[in-house]
Image 1 (cartoon, rainbow, N blue to C red):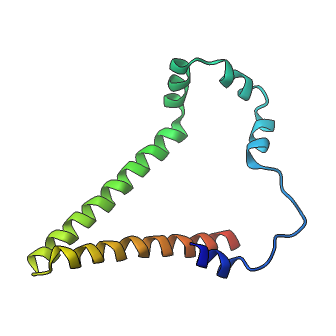
Image 2: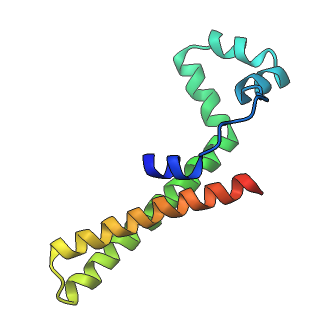
Length: 114
């Protein structure tokens, strides 16, 4: 990660500073922050489970994690049936994860420019 950071972010940021996103959100809904602080733990969890954005995000994350685990398990079983040792299969899994990390960095950079 350090190498990617050094390669991709050579230039220093400009002098223009942007306001943090949290402050922008609080300005849009000024009383929301004070209402959240007054809630107890039980009421906070009730409010979280009523938030449809959180529920959709949690559902999508769970589905994607399930797909990833299923693909990894099936790939391991297929490679094991093909005569590969567990040691070689673990290298394949590590490469799979490394490819995801590199892909996320590349697509994140591309999306930040568009």
